[in-house]
Length: 184
Image 1 (cartoon, rainbow, N blue to C red):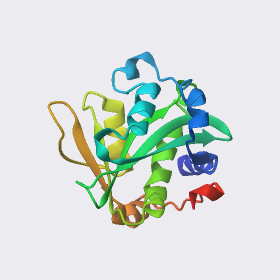
Image 2 (image 1 turned 90 degrees about the vertical axis):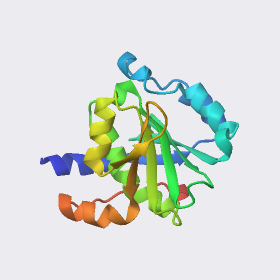
Image 3 (image 1 turned 45 degrees about the vertical axis):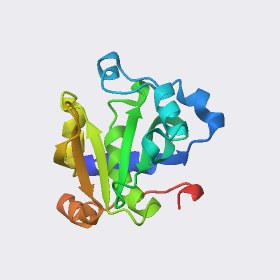
Image 4 (image 1 turned 135 degrees about the vertical axis):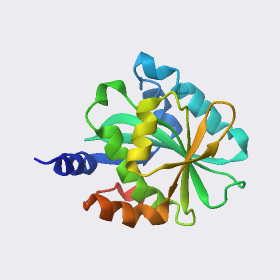
């Protein structure tokens, strides 16, 4: 099985589900490795910020399921200051699922999923701590590029949704992703 076949297989097992308050207790069980904790907010902090609508944006929280098991989460938020962008954040894969390519498969899938979910947004933005070398390499590998600083530490990365076709052509792969009915 080639690398692209393995990645496609992982992608087929992925599902993204909008999080309901009833799931919050399940999400709080998600954990990252100790060396990653300094780069990530805790799940209760993420839920608090999304619930209280920190910064005036509109937040959506999604659970990541891999073969029907809760594997992680992420947020998508929209702000008036960036009317053409979705802010991707709070991305974490539970430590028990790490090291299997699920984070990469999730990001590859999201590059096609976000433009369908938020069709009026042409860009995906994310903030990353440059000391989080693994995250920076992963974001760059899937097609994000540096576009500025957001304060003394964090760096802003951007993905242009129109670049998806170019990205797929460069990698010479076609993805078959099955979504939950709520995701269309």
